[in-house]
Length: 167
Ligand code: FES
Image (cartoon, rainbow, N blue to C red; front, top):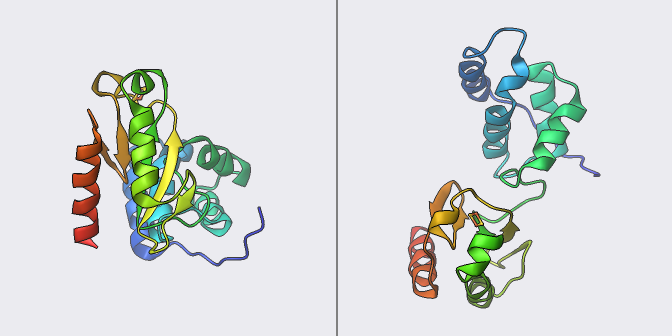
């Protein structure tokens, strides 16, 4: 990954990470890695650049590879710039059996993008993800940090309208 961007954790970011660190033994800084990555991702405009991951590694005194491993494992971390809202649609078995294919094609048609693409107005990025752990409420979509369940094309339309209205 070639990334020449510059990133520094702000004093506020560090304070927020310190709040997490305070919950764990001093020699277990790695326990705060996931919340620290969330903080860095938010501070970096919604995605984790190499510089942002390095800053987290330095602050938590962890090998950079450990930070990269975690950031690249979880679908909630973005490794490239994304739109204002990230729509993560689950296509695993329970969701598939409950109609996620219809949800996917409706989303693609409405947004005029494919998976891993962002709308021209930079509002939405569409992603396909593995099970979101809410199978009993399939089909499921995560929009940023909120779950939307028992989806239908009509619910998708209402949700997109609400997000577009918010701007
Ligand atoms: S299969 Fe979709 S949430 Fe589990």
